[in-house]
Every structure is written in structure tokens, then in C-alpha cells.
Length: 124
Image 1 (cartoon, rainbow, N blue to C red):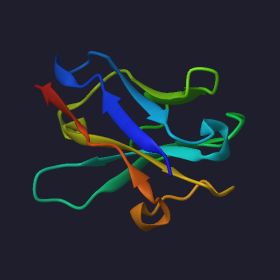
Image 2: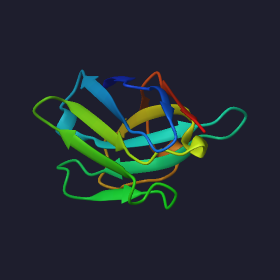
Image 3: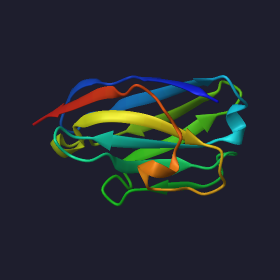
């Protein structure tokens, strides 16, 4: 199995930027599709972005297209989420997720491994 540790969250004003990172250990990182999800208080966990094992394919939720960029460095066993032009509605706990699959899935149930989450708060 793989262990995930995500960090980089914080408090930022609307329009600002943050970069999240998720470090993986335990198994061959390049065997895993990686994704980011977020969860607002009282809401269900929602898909944000996913990236293929080699990094050549990405998928984004409509709400973040053009503002967020997912990337990975397989040599460093790390996946990133660059978040620009942040909005108050981007507030939530962000989780990285991994699964040994070739699909860029959007459902949380498709991912077997999860980070502990990092809080992102965007003030208006």
C-alpha cells in the first residue's frame, strides 16, 4: 500500500494563490493515479483534479478549470495542486488520493488511499 501526507494549506485572501503538495511513500509512486478532492463543512467530498500515472493526462472539475493545475514529480514521489485566483467557495479540507488504476476517476469511492487532509480557507 501507499501512505500519503498532504500539506500546504492555509488562509489566503480571495484572488490569492496556494500550492498544495502530497508526498507518497511505501510503493512505486508511478503505479498510482493521483487525485485531489475537497470537502466543505457539512458537505460531501468532491472531486477537484486527477492526473495519470505518467503525468500526461489530467482531469479537472468544471469549477476549477483554468485556475488550478495538478502536476506530479515521480522522482520525488509527490503530487502538487497549484491553486490560483482562489475564491471563498474554494474553502474546505483538501485531500490527496491514490489508486492503482489507469482511469482518472472522479468518485471518492474509486480511490483506496487518502492523505490526512489540509485546510484551505479563502477569505472574501
